[in-house]
Image 1 (cartoon, rainbow, N blue to C red):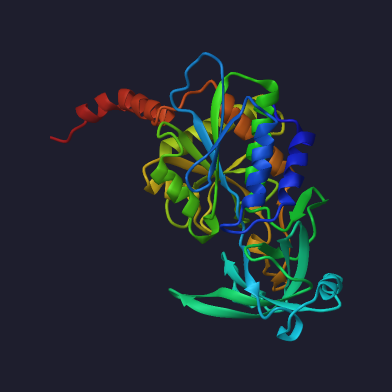
Image 2 (cartoon, rainbow, N blue to C red; image 1 turned 90 degrees about the vertical axis):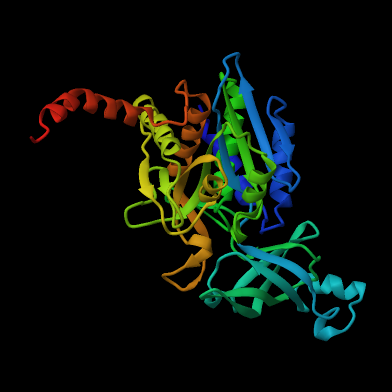
Length: 395
């Protein structure tokens, strides 16, 4: 099974990486290095940069293997360019660049924003851009807000920064590196980097233990602007059509779906309910795991706080369902303080999620595209009461 120290190390490393929609290169590089160190895992990229990791061992053919999928981005900024060439719009000497890096001068940067954070959280908030191999800190001075349907959304921002920032650099909120407190891990972004880390922890365990089984791991890009990577993956058939697709998310904690109560079998989201036989099978695997592994618990909930890639996969022809862990400070919005804050999840939920993934990859149960338990129950009821129904027809 999954070793907790190894899984926690992967989690900490992934949560430390910079990312933003369409600028997921640092996380992609991490996954490439991860796969290169584990040659039994086969990695390929599709035409739009989504990554597909594949594990297979044993002679037995798995007709309908699982494909776990998570996205690699988080709501964030992308640097478009410095406004002027230096402080007060004048050119900058090499000496001044060095001084500016130490904070003696301030520079102005224009950055596009991508993702779902309410406009009132921006102005005055601290940010950091990963540029030239280091973090450059800054603060949001102003935003451009536009209407999108019935909502107002931030389109771009002017940001005061301590040094020049390279065009295309990803920007995140200026929050600390991952830290653990009271059984929870707090980070700049757990959505959905923690989901990707759980998949990598599962793949690591498969590579070490080498059990019989088969699984795919799809890492998608640009989810936060509307599942763009997942939509492309469906069109490109990056994931074999035979797969049962299980999309993993960090989903905002709800009154009836609390963190610490176990990972969640997500039967649907705000947009749709998922493919019922896929949901039922994923639940059967979790139920079997709960009987065999002490301390494993899970929940089964409708998580309708938002929409996730499961709905996209279902709509585009895949048999898909979803799982998630309950998330605090969704998209870094601390509603209690009305300020930007770190996202956080429960570490036991994360550990149980990785065990669930390992069980899905190695289960002896076979997914057929039908809810066999429900069909068996209906057949039993028909056999027991069908004759009575026919004999009791009113005359």
